[in-house]
Length: 631
Image (cartoon, rainbow, N blue to C red; front, side, top):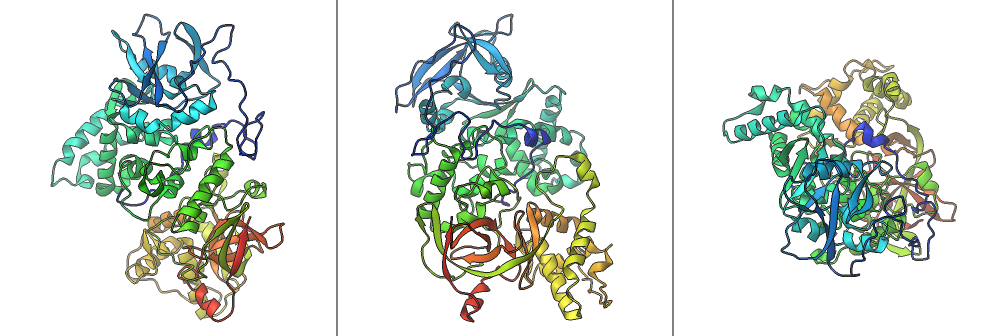
């Protein structure tokens, strides 16, 4: 995988505001019933079209490797799509192509015919079939919406388990992005062809070349903002393909060439690369069949990096990645889970969490993926189970293997265990939250007016410093707390490195000086003390970038003992600060209604407790290791 760990990135506005089908708090769609295994009872399958005559799927043999492929009839004068379905058995020498696309709005359906009987498909699939349709002969294709009986949950579950073989078996996987109504595709292809030629030059420096200022780069970004790049399933569909090709309007691109060009840009022009939003695809789709370059990354890193992607079924946030080698138990052929669409998504999330804790050498590392809203925390469900459909932060501190944190070191040695729906682990509660402060970085904020009305980042941080520094009057206190304040704002990081390391501390200080230069508050208090400005030339944008990564989706806290920190947005006064055995970061807990139980609010950065300092408190008898029960 190599390079920097992919960060979560904001999807386009259209993706953030798209309505999702209604789901109840336990993950069951309205009208479904639950049995005791967590399955939603199956009701009679619905027909696939309104009217007196409709296409009925013929059953596939249960448990076999049978799949359907569709035969797309040649183009005719009208735009009516006509198909036939055939059953084949995997593995096969039969040649077919597969389609990777965005389903689109399921409420907007277009009629087609299947074996002379009516069916309905989404507008986007109809457009893809028209684009792929051949003039003179039938085209053999696999498309999930047509080749799987979507109303048959058992068939759907089994077919999803065959996705690896389906996409690896396809001769070509056509990635349909859309119609390119603005006519950008030809210009984008010409740009990429020119970049391909330039890459062969050993003496070529992109920043010095006129192409770095080419007006076609924004057109490429427009293409990469198409909804396909923000859907969950497409990562594996493109990654598993032998020959993935993008269809954008009337132009075809080699998908892997696009990723290779982007990877090259990451090394040759960070400015251009930062506009492309391809981190996730480069990190995971490019090297799907390989183990990660960083041996500390696991299946949960993949799920965490991909959690901003969209999907219709929330359980697909797991199922869509089960074909990855990291989802195999001990590197074998058995997956961590088997797809089962009769289960609620929360049941699936808990099932995966239990396996992750019981089968991992770093069991509680998974807890860093826990993010909550007030609603999810109030629901009658295990607070320690990651909700993969809740996304608030940009950088998950305890899952990022490049972060230096070693908060627990030796906080007991008892292996965590599961009793009923509770998680029990050794830990130490060392402080509690005294005050919380909102930061100017909230993850999803779509109202342009509210953004325009928001004060500048610099002024917001200046106001925060005035609030937290009013209690520190002496020179020595002020200097110590300014340093703690700036380090907390970037969660102690300088890029991918420790900001307090001797090789980085001066640069981090200089970046903060540049960021806070207009505000005398950082340098002159009531006692007119001046903080020395370092000789190193700092970067305001670099400090703000690091601050956005650390602070987005979090609030600033002060603890009872006077420590600064970053904590989940829903943290409130009185919440507890703890370190659990075997974890890299502290966590915020809240007392549950159950006696002696706690709710897990989420991970935290607490300056002064990220390097195992809690062990010193234990040695001095200032806090005690105990069994903490999370419900």
